[in-house]
Length: 68
Image (tube, rainbow, N blue to C red):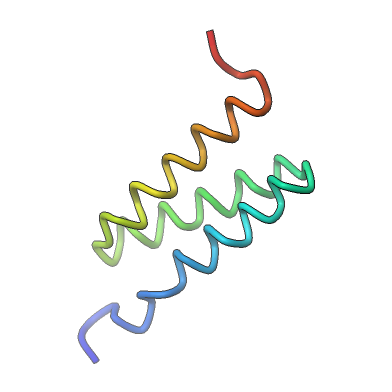
């Protein structure tokens, strides 16, 4: 297994946990898990999960009315 490959599914797990918290309106927890997914995705080099994490953060802001 290559360097960082053991973390390949960790961002996906964080994304799913964040999405679950978002559905039950635990927005602060959702945000923290999306940010964890971003951190791991950046460190390991997983652009698809990085994109998905940022998209979820954008949706979270929208749900909370944090837009102009």
